[in-house]
Length: 181
Image 1 (cartoon, one colour):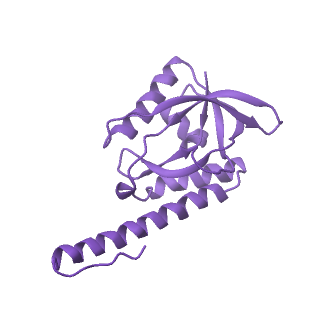
Image 2: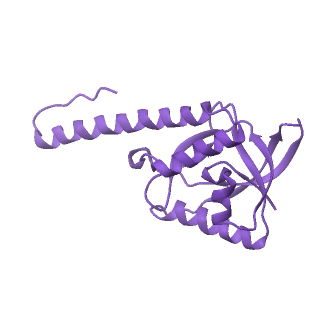
Image 3: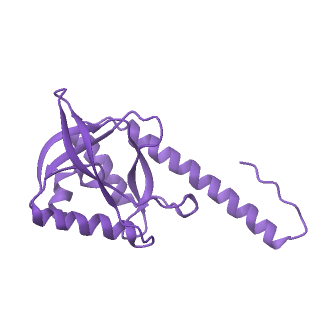
């Protein structure tokens, strides 16, 4: 079975720790999708996921050949990390990716459960560094990754401002607080 992997496991060294039987098949791009840090890793950091709902320039990744044992290992990783705090597990979607040869390929891809805006966090430094290293190693354009981090930073700043305003409102209940978003 062919799986399109777009997170820290684009680094083959990382994928071997998770799924030793997985073999990289090719590099690919998932069109009409964008990266978004809205999943959750086992240690509480933010996990990158896919957003198909807005204009997007595409997501880079690696297509791996995965056997039955590898599939079970992937299921454990993605379903476990997406359901620690939220009951809905990751889901699998069949989709078409573009290869640098101009051909297309049907693959499976995990869609990580979204975390509500107010519960978003930063990715752990090691998770983010693994993604950056993977992008460098594969020669991918890092702009989509940078855009996802900038968007997360804006969300976190809005959340911080909201929490501060809310705290003021709670401490001074007779004072009207105007939110400036």
